Image (cartoon, rainbow, N blue to C red):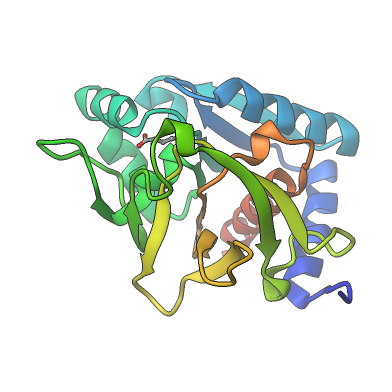
Length: 239
Ligand SMILES: NC(=O)CC[C@H](N)C(=O)O
């Protein structure tokens, strides 16, 4: 497949270079439960490889969100995460931060928390953050024993890196699905080999994946997220 290098991609590349020169970008990882250590490792690897001016912050309480440019909500157990967030006055803080254009990436349980319409939630409901106009179904691919690894096709129009392959390895652990896209403005970033099952999306300042790129050697999803964060920061400081 031809390498794609669109204007947005170029703007992202430029922003990454700019971030090396000037302002510090602050990216947080929600460190309550789940695969947060793996996300932090990936961010550190990119920061060190690319000499980025990047602060990587562990987010454990609402006040840690101060001056944050980007946030990763990791996979884990969405019920545990949602109860913790609600009980600690965290849900509304993150909601407000996202509506103020903070760039967020939810992987797996993180996607569940960001979906506007959640199906298959625990009895009594789950307090979610929302903001992403998709319907997500918990455990769409089955229970724990149905967890699988498979090929994710990266949507050509949204190529993650101009020089990367058009696929990536997807690790799906009791994964949620994106059962419906609720807005034409949701961009599909990745889908399975059946060409139908959407597993990665982007909507404005929100990225969400059903699988776990932090558990693979592929850095492209984290690089893609960081570019988005830097672009957004530069846009808002230009205003
Ligand atoms: N790997 C994951 O994050 C699994 C998510 C889990 N099924 C949940 O509903 O929270």
